[in-house]
Length: 74
Image (spheres, rainbow, N blue to C red):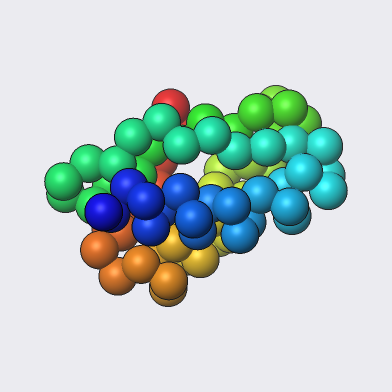
């Protein structure tokens, strides 16, 4: 259930990443609410990827899915 919610939310942020030549893949969702993702394409090698992950992806997931406690990169 939580994994499905996270997958849907990631689909919401994916177009923004793809517009800059990157993408995001869901790796896992832990029972503790920690979501592990992999940034690919331009996002995978971008020096700003940590900021994108925390300020963009993590903030959006936490706002839309209260069970999410953190988003980390694989």
